[in-house]
Image 1 (cartoon, rainbow, N blue to C red):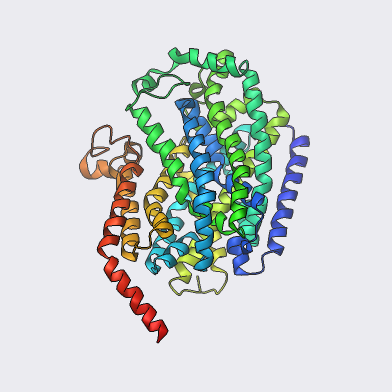
Image 2: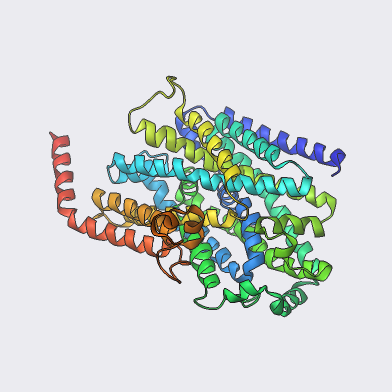
Length: 529
């Protein structure tokens, strides 16, 4: 590690980030500025911020490492990220979110749902979901950044974790969403450059595009037996249809994240920050190109690392990383890249970590201050009357750091899919109903959100064996890791939680539609009087 090079680079980087954060701080004068950037953020800044928030260390380190095990089938997730995560999220959902947020004067995702269905319970429940469960997702993004610093710069993991947490907390506390988005956009540019170089050098290291894929296909016989037993057919093929690996890849990683992205609170809020629909349409191209380079590159580099490691050391990537998928990409970078690039990629990973965690912490903070406490009429915490959202920043960051110490290795991709899946099952039916169905009722949305959340949690506790075995509750109560046999042990809860919440939403709305019409009539009549 050449400190004479690293230290000046980091000083320049932190200086630029601090300058942007200070600019955001100076531009933040109202509550609307802190929450939604005054609704006048430039579309390019919004798209880059959205992409940087979406593509964190969990995508580059966690999912890149997972691709090193599963293979290039994960490129289907990159396809869904572009089609659903960018085009649908901006051009279709984004325009609806922006208009509805202005119409209802809503500046957070839970408040948007709560005001649409005239339910304080929905606002508080959704806010509590975010504030209590999102730290698990936040922590794994922190883990990804800290693990890279540990591996590449020989930095102590605990020190790296605390430094990242402190920097992010200062940015979010001071400047709100403007500071977050300006620093996100700068970080996104660094990420784009870093991943483009990384992809080019990777193909160069394995003999080029054609030879690289041909060589990787020829390594089919080197797949470890446990993976073959699970359905692995090689790193350039999808797993065997219906096999344990196929269900894990398709239901948890591809569909869980690919669908769940449409109901992510921290991403939905980005659509509230631009001034008109045209800005969202203009954001599609920038966001699409960014996601293509980030996820497409990560999901191709991960599998190709197997070919490089085998050619140079006779080992596949999983063996070279000591069995920890979260270390595949960091070790690969150290193996093939020159020293100067390691420093550049350090900034790429720092940018990915800071951009995503700052956005997640901002959402947790607003969930605590706006959606929970303000909705409940509480304007003081710990006996102090201050900006409650800033208190939420501190509490959210503390929770994320604690979880980062507790969670086991190799958990990044799984924890990401866990959070995305729960959001998709709980929020997606009510969100779509808010846009397109005037007959949707408060009761329908309430029971739908509760159903999606509850079925997801029960699935993770008692059916999906990776989580149920680790948590141990099913074993303690019923004497076995999962209640049902395969394939239920490998089917992500989103696959049954989302249909359940959708059915409940439709049925309950239809059953309570008459009462809802009556309530609206009485409210309108009362207002007229």
